Length: 266
Ligand SMILES: NC(=O)c1ccc[n+]([C@@H]2O[C@H](COP(=O)([O-])OP(=O)(O)OC[C@H]3O[C@@H](n4cnc5c(N)ncnc54)[C@H](OP(=O)(O)O)[C@@H]3O)[C@@H](O)[C@H]2O)c1
Image 1 (cartoon, protein in one colour):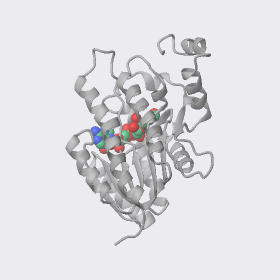
Image 2 (spheres, protein in one colour):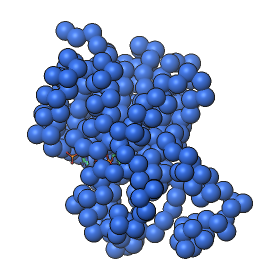
Image 3 (cartoon, protein in one colour):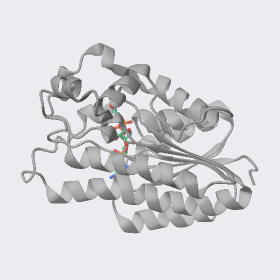
């Protein structure tokens, strides 16, 4: 029976989730990994067990289904070695403009981006509060600070994660449990090539300097949540996006904001 701490990562089969799994394995944590593609999780399990001598459990499942979320919740609630929870599973939808969107796809997005992290955080806090220690990273996005045409639920679900994480940290006062709403800008991953995003022109329109790499931002996120001083719940990994979010949410700079977005973002 292992006495290593346990890290649970959702969305671990690709992109940033896979990088979180690699980093947390390198730090000596056992892993519980989930995503829909079980065969990818199995090969990641082999890679990480061989490289770091840790043990990895995989739970292939669709986390936009309530019964699967419940199954993972039960597992998490009873994990007395739980130290890390990373809610990373997510997808983008070249959503279209309301009402010309698929209500079913939008509903799945709300379940995956919001209902699953909320329920998994609640479950994780049971062992974490008993142990008096833990780290929770909810992968949001700079999109959570913006409101733009054609991305209604993507922005709204990420905004929920930001406020949810800030409030959750208040509920953890007096413990050594730390919550982060991780808000990267554009990151090169499979996200932009997925079935739901492949027709979106975004990928070709965004200039190269606005893109970051998954290993780089993930390392920054882990370092930031473990900081002893000046730790922030809302963590934006690059200066450029910190400035953009300030401009986008600041009233004084409204004219700059309107100029930057062609008047679309309020
Ligand atoms: N890439 C960016 O520019 C960017 C920027 C800001 C924030 N984000 C956020 O970062 C997170 C990770 O995205 P990424 O860029 O790493 O994308 P990615 O490479 O496409 O990875 C997404 C992960 O989520 C899993 N997933 C998707 N739908 C799922 C479902 N229904 N049930 C269970 N797992 C599911 C995928 O695995 P399976 O397909 O195997 O299920 C995959 O492991 C997302 O929450 C995204 O919104 C991305």
